[in-house]
Image (cartoon, rainbow, N blue to C red; front, side):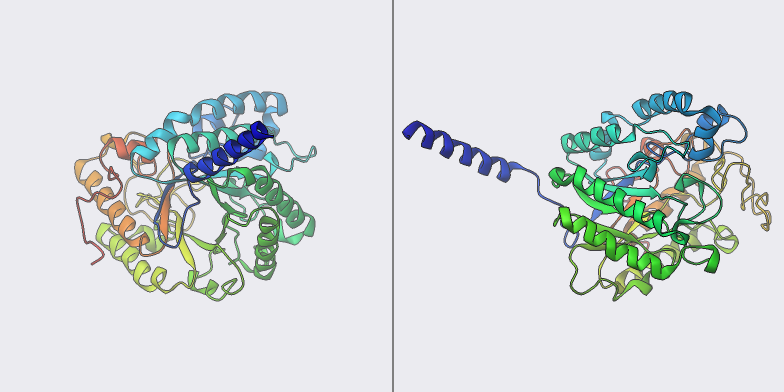
Length: 414
């Protein structure tokens, strides 16, 4: 009896000590989220890894067509080689060393709730598991982001399938997405010290009328996602993208009677003709104004979950494979502003010194601006050579502040 009691007491003490030592969940109300996206890893995007698509043929424009053209066996072989090399444990250590505390990891529905009628292949979850372990070792938190949903929620290649937006047209698409959320939440319920946030849907396109996502259907999906997550995990923060609505539209939504709700805005200054025409000072003024007028007025935690150092849309395939750029006038309906030479592909260090300085000024202004809210997540960690977007290269070139709290150009937002 004595021995049994001693063992039980020792066990209880060990559990208590482990609980004390176990890293706590992130407090988005008092700590600033400073993170980076691991884009193009577990869900392909042509502009992040153009060679993967070029090696698959001219018709490969998204992960659906990539897998369809190659067939499941060859697609699985090529993707497995990519998953095992594009992001490794070393990247997590480098991210932490730069002063960041989060990674956001995009993944597609097909990795979680596969359908044999679709050309996609699976195996991504094994690497998501590794990522959670690597994040724990590095002292980072993870936001799991469902980046692609059945039927496509935005028609972009980053949803897995470029083209029509059919996600909210068919209830089975929404139901399948909810099942993916349930499975993800259950899978990482025991990793609440690392997986502190779940994003049920990336960039649903609600501003195209009948051609886009139904806004009421999206709101109901957010309610249902909350229920699915809370069935399993009371601690995870549910991160809701604004659907490209004015961010203030969401004030009042899920604000009472719900816990740990965070809004996500993606702020890019390059995907409209009037934005791409701005000079560096005008871009800086724009992001500062966004903080003063929008972030400061939100009634719930709000982050900028995607943003960039880019002031051009020149990066190869950025607007889609086979589609040009607004900056050099090759995008339909745009007019020439400047040359894309040097911006399409290449090294940060190959850019002119004044261009590097302008990018750093723009990045620092955004860092200051977005911390008016709950924080930020840069898009993206690494690419095959997109100099305005590649945080790993920007850090190495001293164009992205390292650590991220350091400033060469302080006080730009007043």
